[in-house]
Image (cartoon, rainbow, N blue to C red; front, side, top):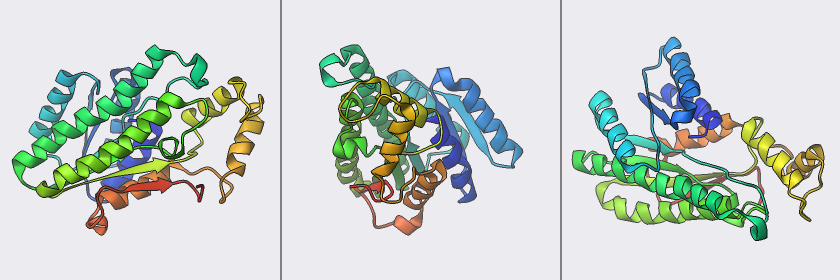
Length: 253
């Protein structure tokens, strides 16, 4: 899952009493291990393993290893994602679009499927939270593949919630808007400035100000605020919520 959100969600969920099994792409192994080390140093029971979510065998092995270590998961924060290129549709590279959809849709589906099947076999119920985006709600300029993939995650969440309801497994999604500071915020601002579109100027500082200017609260959200919503959806406080997409957007519509 995106490292900034993962790093914020992990301690919050640990605070809520969850034992943590953390996974990230093999290329992010160093950051993943550092997150695990920090959690362990603070007394949190955290297990880490890299996983390529687009590789079926790797997902299956990771879920099996997690079950062997902790037992069947009671909850899943399904937060894998790849932002892809920021460029208008006429010039969007199809190979990159395929990668975005493979990670953000097929990867999310595979992880959810394997975890849900483990939950079903144990007959204990569970809760799943998928990461979508406001880009999937309204469509972001110059981000067609990412927007399409996150719209798919919202639809996937609603379908899965209906399929898994008979097994007492709740499935919801979150859709953050502008979240910062951090690498993804900086990259989005810089790439939108480079895109040369009618929607944003070519100065990153002006792009950032323009983006924030569209938010009624006049600021971007924090990863901690995203983690708070994840915490709520993973808790019994949301026990009658399923098939929902919670927009974390500072009032943007």
